[in-house]
Length: 142
Image (cartoon, rainbow, N blue to C red; front, side, top):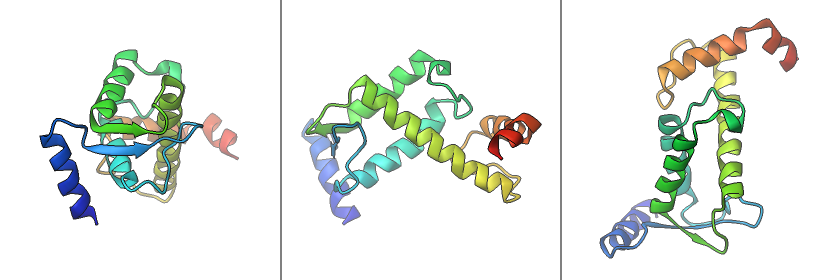
């Protein structure tokens, strides 16, 4: 199935179309039953750590140019079906992914893993480890 989707997306790209069609629900998240949801997840998983700082906890803390760059990259890759990926929906996608990823990383860190995961920038990993080690953060988690 993946190979068929890859071939189809390459054919679309060769024809001058966007490689993937993704269904966006009204509340802004991607329909998990969408055929190309895996392509979406892969692009988001690959690009967010490269473009955005995973340490930034507040939306306002991200560089607007980085957010714009990420949005433009998604818009080049995906044709949105049913609903457009508005700024509000885009914000939801990024926030949900960052919270989920930080939760996974925190579990890895608390599990005793010291080395940086492959898809995360080493400087981001070090900053997260320092943040999770602070007494205030530990009290907040309890």
